[in-house]
Length: 111
Image (tube, rainbow, N blue to C red; front, side, top):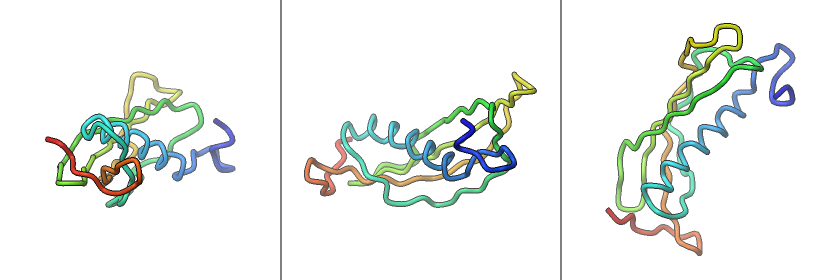
């Protein structure tokens, strides 16, 4: 949306980062079957800008499951408004979550 972009019409990187965290958290929740908390992001490199009107797709995959933590890779692709049907990779990130209990303390992930 226009409120999520800068004066050049490019979407704020922080907005994309937040959506990556949402996508990763969904994958983590499904695997851990409960609450998780984001504890680390390895790296974000934006390969190209995202423009208002672009359609983004987020693909999350489990990289590693530990005792209490889970690492998810999230890839982001943009279908540009003016060139529909063509998908370009925007960014990817490796995000680590910790499974937490109702009190917010780490819990063991059942495997």
